[in-house]
Length: 113
Length: 110
Image (tube, rainbow over all chains, first blue to last red; front, side, top):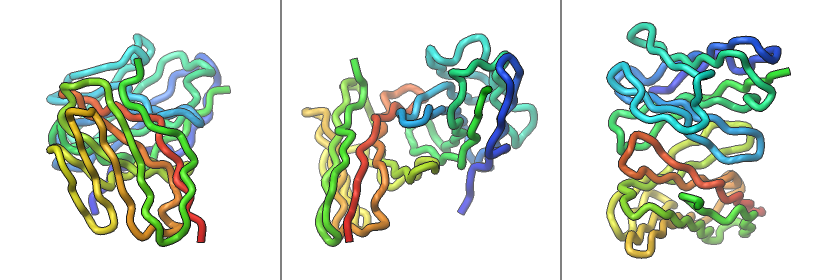
């Protein structure tokens, strides 16, 4: 079964450093998303991406965050100047259409120290 | 105002029983509704989706939607210990995002 691949599975970074989280969505999917889940809390929407541009973003997705699709397969989330409160599990997801269910990757656990 | 609400549980049921999980949502314009299962430390896994009022069955799972009451439910028949997980209700309001509830933790005892 097709799957969404995320790397790395775990990243530890120092406060103030930049991190890039990587995702390979399912190949025939057109919509891409980033979500995060702080330990013990709900899955929170960050951003959706379609046709090489951001379609929706939440209040969490401020200027320290950016997304990019640098080639035909990868989809990245960059966090500039990480803060302690950015520590969370970050999930990439993709879908064939905007009202279809999303397939989630296995996540990247980001720990900011 | 919470957009998608679920009882956090835990909901405890014995093996073989029916587990009933409920969800309410606030946006009347919501168009599609999803149930995800999330095991501890893992990513959400899609188990059911429903777009129209009424019931939709898939194996041991039945999703029920009542748009007038803004209510979605998931029934799990013949519950198994392997069904023990957190069940997330997610709603698509017509924009390109799913909004998740906090999830209901289900415990199925042997």
